[in-house]
Image (cartoon, rainbow, N blue to C red):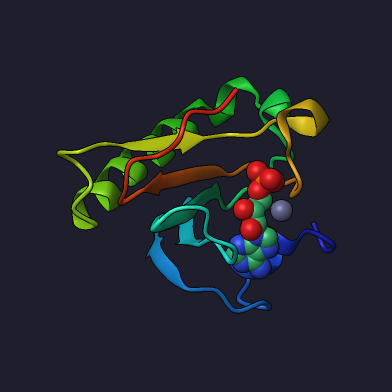
Length: 113
Ligand code: AMP
Ligand code: ZN
């Protein structure tokens, strides 16, 4: 997707602080962190929203969760815990329409609706 900011990050057209990369998944620091640790984990395939997932995407979503677990361990968050958030479309507060999972932690997080 030529006009997708996260596809541009994948293609290194826009700089980002990458914390993990493999052939299917990229993880990078959120530019506007909402917690001490705030990392975005995305599939390299352009999938706009959770509502656009299809059967063949199940593996990459599973992989994203394993990457989240790995990063959480590396950041020392495994014992105290952390949060993984996916916002879907307008009511969910999604602003960037390339599927992404927020990995938040490093401190006690507030509750949300
Ligand atoms: P969402 O509201 O779930 O769509 O979240 C989009 C997230 O992307 C926000 O937390 C933004 O701070 C983050 N974001 C937007 N542009 C960039 C960028 N160039 N690099 C890193 N994070 C970004
Ligand atoms: Zn994209």
